[in-house]
Length: 156
Image (cartoon, rainbow, N blue to C red):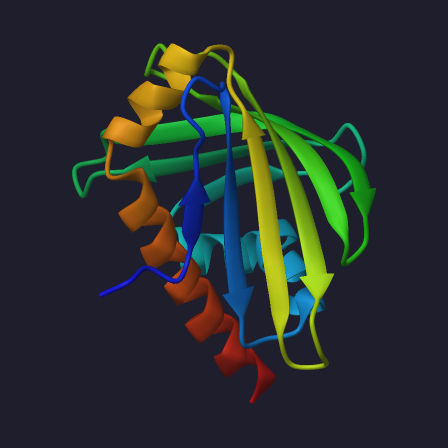
């Protein structure tokens, strides 16, 4: 089965692009990325902090049932343009990966359809390639499927 979320990674570059069309308006895809309650539902992470403003910080965390931290990420939000775009730094703690820079664009295709475009810049080609060796594409596709399902239900 073909994944709806496309990961485009050219050989020898320290960046990649992620694209996904959704059957929901761009404003809802933007909200799903900037409202803590929605982030928790589709990403499966606990939002420890989220300051929805320029230079605002955020922190996400996932723990095991025993309370062991499995994943923690943090960063800063920049250049927020409501329902259109933002930039963020993204640091995966406890991994040894350097901070990455992520550009998000929320494009309206119609009243009920939109496109998300993420451009991610890594410190090196090697770091990007290391990320791609993980089940990255499958994981982000599953998360985007949840985003669309959860957000569609919020319309009802």
